[in-house]
Length: 125
Image (cartoon, rainbow, N blue to C red; front, side, top):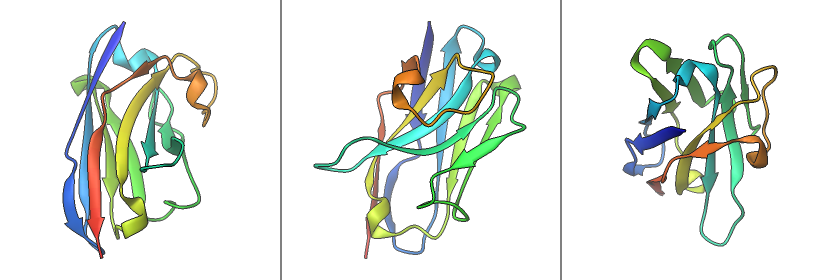
């Protein structure tokens, strides 16, 4: 089992930034790839970014490419999502997730085994 707890969400003006953290406990965090997803009201959960277990490879949704950066610190059992140049359309609940599919990066939510409870990000115009 891996327990994930997100933090760092909040209210920010358009053009601002936030840094989300995902603290992991339980089984070895470094054994899992990590992803961030988000869900806006009335919409399905969507992929945002993912990183391999060793941090060497990352992948982003087109909507956040160039603005968001995913990273991880396995020594601290923590993952991060740096979000810059935020837009109102980035408003959503953000979830971190861990996947045992370590051979590749996956954008499919059903390939993530563990999920956090989510943190709200609200971007005002």
